[in-house]
Length: 170
Image 1 (cartoon, rainbow, N blue to C red):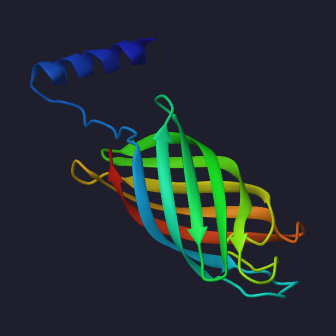
Image 2 (cartoon, helix red, strand yellow):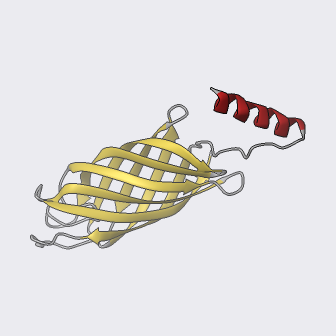
């Protein structure tokens, strides 16, 4: 209790002297475009073509102060995969948020064979996401994250991808 009173006294004193604590980042909705690379691509079953790199379309929609829906679409040469996720977003520094979450990835389209590999595997599977978003200026968003699917390949093997990009806030 004494510690809390002491902190309150120091904070009030600093505010009276004109000191303002740094504002933490807020969530912002954005649409982004970036690249994604496969960190782990089907080690056991590699029939079909593999998209080790793909374009990434990202949308982020805040749902309250700490939650957001972040949906990604991975567009590769041989396949298209979508991965909507629900995230817990925490402000780390001014203009910087960290986030972790879970979701589900599923194949949207594939050319030729049905088992073409995308950066998150070749089958529908749960995914985990962790990353950081940075809001420089008034209309930009930069993001970098890792997505991991424990059963992304044939429902038996893990898949991981590193995703990064730039977005426009709205």
